Image (cartoon, rainbow, N blue to C red; front, side, top):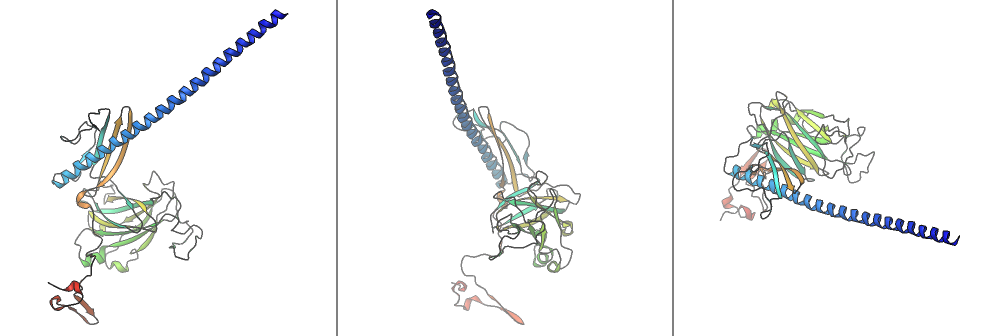
Length: 370
């Protein structure tokens, strides 16, 4: 009996040893897999970053290329690169990033100077003047669609049952209508690019307030362009138009809120200037247009769309950006602007007016002529 027990004890020890070895093997294998996985993730992050920088290099080269051609006067209004080549910009550009590093480079750069939409990031209470010009000047623009959303990602809107209230100092959130807490208003002024004299500006320029009221998904608010005559008394001048905002409007709409201004053909122009201003909150805005044939038009002389793909070993990153074309940047908001005193030579009084001679004036100092 003693020998049998000894043999059983030995067999149990052998089984326990085997189990312990298997357990240690599994633990070591697990730690090895985790370490390898962490190493691969770290390497992939590094390669992804390198591929992103390579794609950015493609954007920078495309931007330099387009601006240089524009300054030289050789850039076509509808210039485009719509297929992937190893050298899309000709001599002077190399897709490799870094010193002789052929494994990190941009593999494809596409560009389009006549995109079908324009995109802007509007800071709160800052205006931007943009040009909406059709590539086909033989057909007038008939509709301009402005789509917007909160730049901070806010997806709440003024309820459809709430009136078009504006925030006030003593105003509290009543049913979700406080614009200080939700998507803001975008003010848009449309000016046809014809003869920009005082008469045409007062009869053809239209201001519309795009209001972020909730609505059905994929629906679009509409407002009509001014009827011929005195624009100041037109019912569509200064109108508040609901954007029918809905977070389910994508991808049918570029943004959550959208308003279309119709009947612009009455202005008889293929180019409009649009002054945009984000009110109460910053907004991201997309603009598109259609002509009298209801075709969406390509918009020229405003933005270039660049699409770049970077590669690091077997990791790819693709980015898409828009750059302003050189001649369209920094359009002024005002006819005259000064950081100092402004000499007003014109005096207007009931029944008449007078233009002063600055040579005999001693005050204010800014009116002195030395």
